[in-house]
Image 1 (cartoon, rainbow, N blue to C red):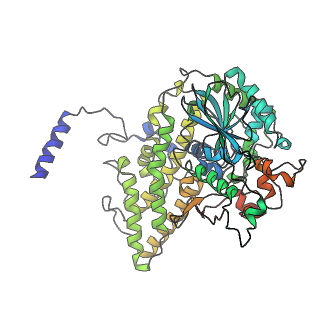
Image 2 (image 1 turned 45 degrees about the vertical axis):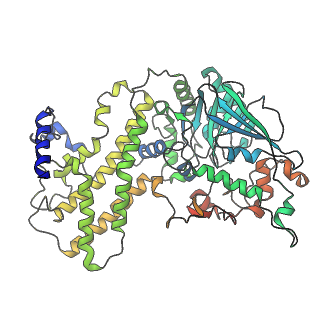
Image 3 (image 1 turned 60 degrees about the horizontal axis):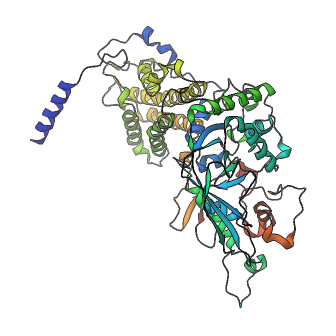
Length: 574
């Protein structure tokens, strides 16, 4: 009875629907005219160009303001204008009761600013909480852009602050902030958002658009390092406050590891400027050739390209809201990641599962079923495979490939003229990325159809066990290549998952500074070992580097950090 009732409702609903007039291949009742559809542009054996950067732009956009992916690839290539909304809290730690009157730094989480709340036990320290009274206009630098290194983490800031790369100025933070604020003043930029263990804001004026919420004189838990490190048998062990605070900064940063990232900064993607834009910075194309992404730098960029980048950022900073299409780019990117990340991950799991020989056919059918599920919206009623497998290019599947590859972009592409340069870059990155996803998966699906694995599209003869084994091996290689090309950080995680007293951690600066090669403080500064409690955060990290930190190992571990489970309670293991 229930099925009859449901059936009636469905028929009524269908009767009320107004039919849409669709052109091939979307209308399955229409004949397919390959000249109209231009399927020659949708060949399954056509690889993406070797210098294509759309997938880099795509994953960059998908990773903005997320700690995990920007720790994986610390050398940022992207700048995005944004705002910090009214009512947002920001934090600043100090050792005096004076509110900064010069340009300075604030944290988005108090766990971060508490590292800088320095003071002797008899005086305590001071912790300032500010609230925005209006939206603050900011510029965001992606990557681990607050890391003071010579390895490329500061290069986009160099371009904006000085108009050239100055790796020797890697520690000139005061000058860097001064020049950035001077550059941004004509565009009413209030500050700059960067990331290290957590996110921070470089403020140009503590009195502009901000009010004091509290300014507390907090108890200092700092004790002589000898007491912390070498307790006597008669003295109970005192918790290592510095190490606790270090961990809690990493803990706070981990809250923003994944999408949506730090939501206290609202980025305007329609103003994005990327050094992966090959039309904007063509001098970098040959410099990146043959390099892994972890080695991408701006070294060698031409002066002409630097000026073009600065001009693009200036235009983005002053661009009005009317110079935007209104497309919700953030949601578009997320829809694609949501649709494909889990499906590709499942396919990877199925293809790499250890099975007995007699289970191979079952494995192939499971994989192909998942592929068919993925392509359900794109397999037309008149999609018919050839009777023989001579068509190695699978041209019969071109309509499916095109429908999949244009599903998320065809409507936006129809009003290309209304997109500004930043939005055209975003559209191109989505087009290139979804095209390659659909190319590989359509190819896998079509090969499975011709192998007789699709009961809805039968072929004359099914493949034998040896051919199925070769097919599964080919699938495995094709999917592995696709996932490596996409390189989505969502697939990088601790396996097995961490326990309840642990968290999954990706080593970040300054904890992954290479042992014995370079300390986080400048070589020309001398340390006063007797005054360790009043030294800067970076100096203290360096001074007790070996005593308090566990290094992650050689440079390869720093360039390609691997996730690991670390304890959330003592004894810490970072």
